[in-house]
Structures are given as C-alpha cells and as structure tokens.
Image 1 (tube, rainbow, N blue to C red):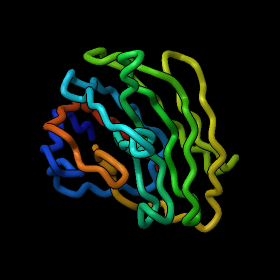
Image 2: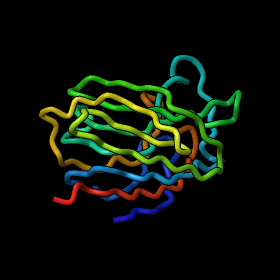
Image 3: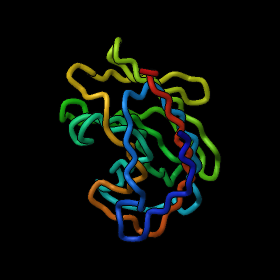
Image 4: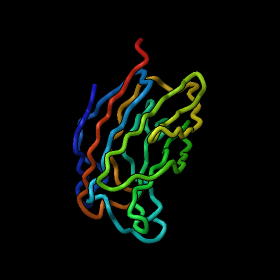
Length: 171
C-alpha cells in the first residue's frame, strides 16, 4: 500500500486532514518527502525548539508507544532539521539525525527490529539508530501524518509532499 499525497496543514491548526489508516505488524517503511517553501517559519523563544512531526507509526496509542520522524525549520541555515521522535512506554525521546533542504526530495528508510529492540533509519545510505523496547508493545496501530507544533499552531499554511510505502512481516 503506497500513500502519496500533498499534505496541507492550515494556518492556525496543528493537523492536516486525513482519514485514519491502520497497520498490523509493519517491518519497514520508506518515507519519500519534500518540504515545500511554505514550511519556512519563524518562532522565537523556547517554542522555536518544538518538534513538528512528519510521519510514523503508533503501536497502540501514539502517546504511549510510537515512532515518528520529527522536523523543525532552522532559519540560519535555511534547512529542515530531522529527528527521531518517539514515545516508548509513555516516555518521550528525540534525537537529531540529520538535515534536508527545502524543496528537495529526501528518502528515509525505517526498519523496525523487534528481535533487537531497535529502530534503524537510513538517510542517504547512512544509518541512524534508536533503541526502542518492543516488549509488550502491540503489533498494530495507526499511521501518523504531518503535525505542526508542540503548543504553537501553524503560523501559515504549510505543504509537505509525502509518500509512505510500508512493508509488513508477511504473517
């Protein structure tokens, strides 16, 4: 199942509109995305460090167990900072994993390894790793789509082209 779409987060909103999509036993996801020029923004103070979310998966409820690729615009470099952003047993974690350019197509491959309790992502062939305790984590959940902000709303309309291509374990 490939889901390709331009997602629009309206001004003064957190979410783009989308219908829920569920998953079961997903093993890998390939995210192909492009942050359009409308994703540039300027927020000052501590809110400038808030992490927006591109896409990912919940394992049950997303504030309990989920893994997403986070992002934030860095005005000084005119780049998008990419992060691992996840909840594991209700604890939130994040880690910077790289950067991409505005209006440039980027691909991230995400591999979920339940045996080794890890999630690996590959950006331009380079592996980025995060520990994730899969013990007692459901094999089902829902896809997570673009979201702007922590507590701030989108300062203007933002467009993100996103292709989600998942693969399951096959049973």
